[in-house]
Length: 299
Image: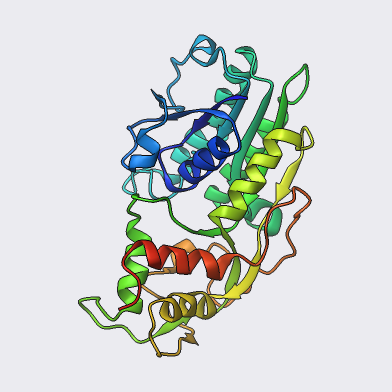
């Protein structure tokens, strides 16, 4: 299946693109910038900014399937500007507009990788502009379903994993923390509360299955393990061979700031995910260990 992976040079899209290639898909990456990881540089690449209003359906012709792993979060916006307006334009408006182009181009199956927040904590939709934008993009994309176009959303939680050769500053910081290499030594703790975590392997399997056999128009709430943030950080300490025990403290963590926890510090965003797509479960610890192995093993 000739498939365009938008956001395919990043961590989530890149892992999914490589997995799809392994499964026999004919994969092309699309992103604003070319891939850095050698394994991704070996795949065909299309320079594309999905937020541009001058894109045409002709640019997407010839693809049978679309996997969209882009979207804006706090990493992609001008934090000095109107965040709500940026999220609305770049998520609520631009993503469904791009899927409409894919439909017009003759794409038959299209999967959007979205956020778990609107399904897991729908009360956040009205009061949090970012979560609202993710909800509106999910609704807008699935509203296009029909007339030979299968539009599906796969909504994922906190993710962990690696793409060979791709450096991710967040995980670099986690490993430095676990190894005691941060310039300012921090106690071994996680902020109070927790959430659901999922490995990139599990997610890529879910995305692949959604492309192949996902129910048209459905939003799948995927995930794997419900962990406290302390338990999650403990996985990194264990993987590098540290004997330090991570405790839960009701204080903001510089590597897991309150701004990244939309359900609020101290809350446990637990849920039982929809695993009807048939992806692997219980994979978070292995994903952390594989990440450590890629970056030099134990301290």
